[in-house]
Image 1: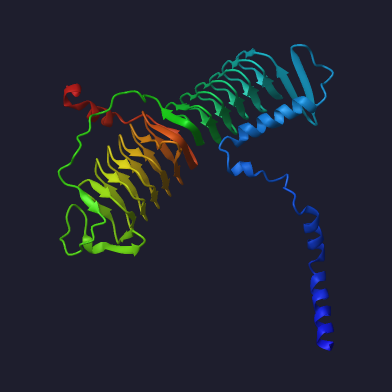
Image 2: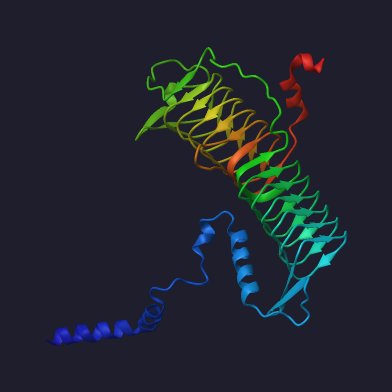
Length: 380
């Protein structure tokens, strides 16, 4: 009996240490935190959708300011003001300090400054050298040369980013995004993201190479050939294999299982990768190859011209998508991510997302590659 009383007293004292936390937990149990919107991690165009929703609510519920007119409605939101107007055209050098909502089409001249968010319910054209805070457009959006956006850009229809446009955060569209050389952002997402020259003809590919390296190759008694040493291959179980060292193949690869390379990896043109591939170092995929699995590199990654991928690309360092690369998968988006800078050359099409911890930037294809693609006759 004495021990039971002692145990009860001990539990009561122990509970007192957590009584305040328990009371607070009971008060918020079953509620969803207003400060944490889980849609943020699910929606690529979260910023645009969230801003549109908040703006509709503010315009509906906030009282109009006394200086509102028929053509311009003004709403006071604490220390901020919201201007709502019809179609508008701003001259060059115009400066806007308030949140601006345009209910029709909108255009502005060069060197304008928008210190707060801009929302356009029609089509929108932004003049060159303009600076903006953030931009949401329900129609088509054309961003002129050397425009700077401090936060995000979202469009419902086609979005064009001209030369040297710089967006510090996300760029999203529900239709398509077109990048010109020098345009950059931290991430881009649309059903179709492409760079200039996407319809240009590419060089013809000779299929059916005479020698193909089949991996996994389980017979480790054969002699090394085509850059592959069977003695370095080990089975990890679960149809996954480890290659101990660098693997630089000189003949096209047919990869049929999940593969880990403890070093750098490269394969020549016209390779076929049906399994996932991970390399501790860099990965280089030859021209006109097909990648059906996922690629993960601890270092840099390069996809050479006309390569086709269907899954995830993840590079711990820089990632380069060269001319003619296609990222397409029926019914689902693909994604490419780089811990360093991602560079995207001309005539690249990706149905999905491009993202970088630093920046994604469109670049012109080097002249040397263009000359090689045209062939000796064209150069003569």
